[in-house]
Length: 445
Ligand SMILES: [Zn+2]
Ligand SMILES: [Zn+2]
Image (tube, rainbow, N blue to C red; front, side, top):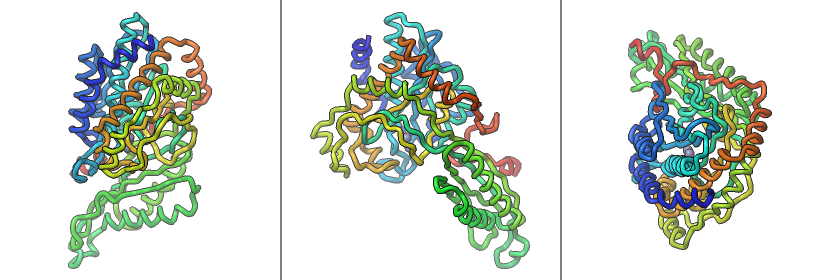
């Protein structure tokens, strides 16, 4: 059956590569992935998948399914691009390689569904179309709205500069905007009648920067001022900052977020302005799964690492990275990273396994034009093929190997026992489009 599955991918390869190149051309920003999501839905539909669900409050999110009954195995697809990573450095581009990510996940689901059908194996394959990973939004909202409930296991991957299963964890995180509403006035003629919202943003930032001394050193807090007034001679009536607060787990994030909120309240009080806080996304730390990671590692070794050629090395070096490509498959990594992913939220709702596959040359910087440029080269297509096959093979194991499924679920239950999933994002709040939080005041103005 494994051989049939791998052979079935040979027939899909040309279509998969065309799909990845089309996503590359589209390069749509988070929450703007209208055509990218439609492309993947169309591809899935043409291969017999039904579009099971779309989400009123989450643009460009969808669930496509094939097969019937249990077990239900999910695969996560992402397809959003990043600003300023396109060919000229000023347009959006796939600076994180999500054109490869979304395509491999989609075609792994297709290859798996084909084999199940051909062998009359009971089970459902679900492909999750997850928008806005780069703003850590899509899966937080999909999880809140029940997308990942009743899954037996879920698989994910990410293109990178090396090949290995990743069973480590990242940081939990809150993404929050703080908006301040004051009163405008002529900055020279009657500043005493103004109440500056920008002052509030600055005082809040100063307070948070003093707070850093008194919080654990693993915590990361970063912010950007998204709106700080329009001209120096007009007292800004509106200002907004956007904060990321990262920590070990949800408990630590919530403790620190509450103290950052106090800084915002203090700034509003000091400046006689009004503050509105909107939580845009809430990420969890990731629940590891040794059994699922071992299955992914085994299948990755069956498929083998991508085999890069001298021509691949030359093509990458012409763009910049001249260190060549990683060879072979690394051991399963278990470290704790400082970055965050909305993928981790899924790991609290179903056993989640993931790997990274080399798709670009060593030394390529993350979130960069160089990734966009390399994500359409033959080398990237080799990495994408390895990812597709290893995901599909692991999906097949999960469908057919009752012992593996039992082991994976036992481990999941043990690690999540007594910890109910709290989506944190309020029910009914629409997913934010780009960085716009939809402040209640804006709606009434
Ligand atoms: Zn990214
Ligand atoms: Zn990414």
